Amino acid sequence: MSDCLFCNIAAGELPTELVYEDDRCVAFDDIAPQAPVHTLVIPRQHLVDLKSADDPALLGHLLDVARQIAAGRGLTDFRTVINTGAEAGQSVFHLHLHILGGRAMSWPPG
Ligand code: AMP
View (cartoon, helix red, strand yellow):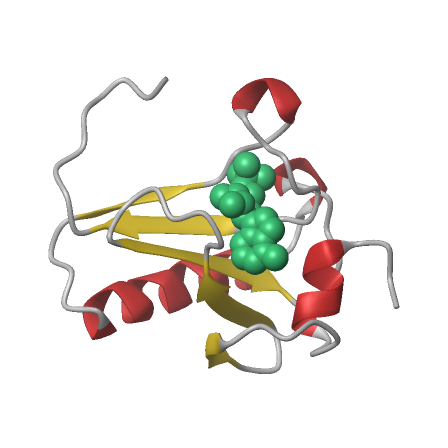
């Protein structure tokens, strides 16, 4: 087993219900949801963060999957977030995109 939590989820080595999967990414609901819908989209490939992700096709795919998941959940308004680095709030160092929706949100984020 990898020492990366999200690599283990992507590899099916941790019991996690996937809401979406394909050859490049998987998606699952956040364990500590911050909104009625809070889903994470992660690449199967281990990339520490957005700074390490230099494949535009993969990045576009993650966004496209996020769009499809939001539509599938019936969200017309939603927020997508990628925290990059601890100071920005990143706590799991495997690139992931948050999809948050189902409630009104404020700006700027904390
Ligand atoms: P970030 O703070 O941007 O790195 O986001 C990491 C997210 O991963 C947090 O929202 C956590 O609640 C979530 N998380 C951590 N462990 C798990 C897990 N085992 N399954 C689902 N989500 C998780």
